[in-house]
Length: 212
Length: 212
DNA sequence: GTTATATGTAGTATTAGTTCGATTATTCGG
DNA sequence: CCGAATAATCGAACTAATACTACATATAAC
Image (cartoon, rainbow over all chains, first blue to last red; front, top):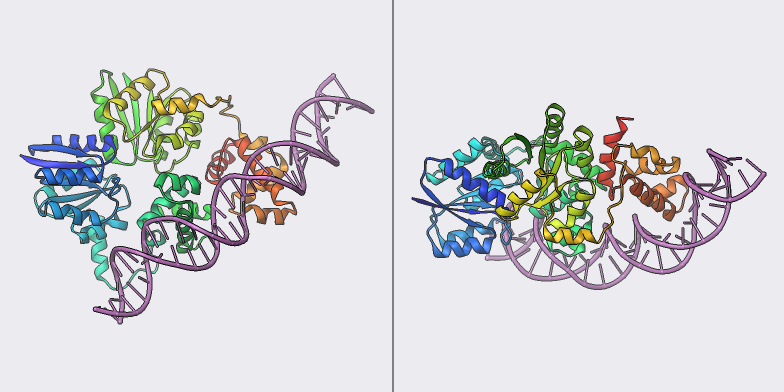
């Protein structure tokens, strides 16, 4: 009997994963955590075979999480489950020691395969990520690099909200930051993308988001 | 037999909702959509009783979605399902004509109640949102009239520049007006169109400029 | 293993933009 | 033609957002 810890702040996502696991031919007990503190606490109190971890989980949010987890249970398998575009972060997390990286929009079948593969002790990556890792071996970068991929995690968060028309003050509220901090991110985003207003931001996002 | 359309770009969320629906004592067919274009297409080809809609869905992304939906099926029930803090967006969507607003971290029981309530033709809001709505008067709206035609000549001039990303001060310069004057027009444009930011303005223009 | 660059975070000072009320045209039905 | 609605315009007093600076930590490069 395997123990699987599902860590995501969205009830519905935990429910979905739990349901998927129940359809696998693997006897497993599922434990849930809705924030990173809880993950740590559970890892300290019981053995876990597989951790399915949302990278956006409250209290976590960066690849340091992997270290914090391995400190408690060095042998736990970690499957990162992310809402972000995979290529933007997968490599980072895999290098930090994750066993797999899966985006939330993956088809059901792929989610199942990922869980089984990682639970089996193997690494899991989607075909797209594998391809990208191969490209990184080649020293020459493509001239038409996607400028969105130069944004940091925080910058992407802010960018996403900006493209929804959320104003700076409200973004600050939502992310629990100062207005000036959000404004700094906004400035950096605009600099990196070579733009100067929201309309251009929308164009950039439209232009590049489909081709990732 | 009810038809429920579940619209979310994350497979796992669709799966979770579908699973929840299957546990309800309501016979229902579930249809899934992973982006907003698909939602629109499905609404044009089949009758839907309930639409469970992620506000973050690719291609959608703001409260103009509600108009686009009602344009196709005026009587469909719309339950907004969001990852953001409820209070920050709920009111906008409810005023835009949604039937319910639910955050993704709501407990399973609340999700069930929300689905049943909205499917039943009643409005659903969490206690917190209900409280907040009591403070606001629900102004009557004309959802299907082309709001662009209510703009004056000067307002249209300003609107066109705004949709190009020109800033208020620059517009004032170009039209030989005071900044406050342009700002006044901008405010009136936003009022007349029932929007509150440039992103929504772009959506409105896109939505109505082809159908004049 | 030290230097350089990137990232996450804010504070102060300043600029950009809004609100509200008011004034002056303009248009339009009776 | 005349008042009522609609449109165009602006100023004073705000509020929102940015520029510039800074600093701590992290990661990469040499």
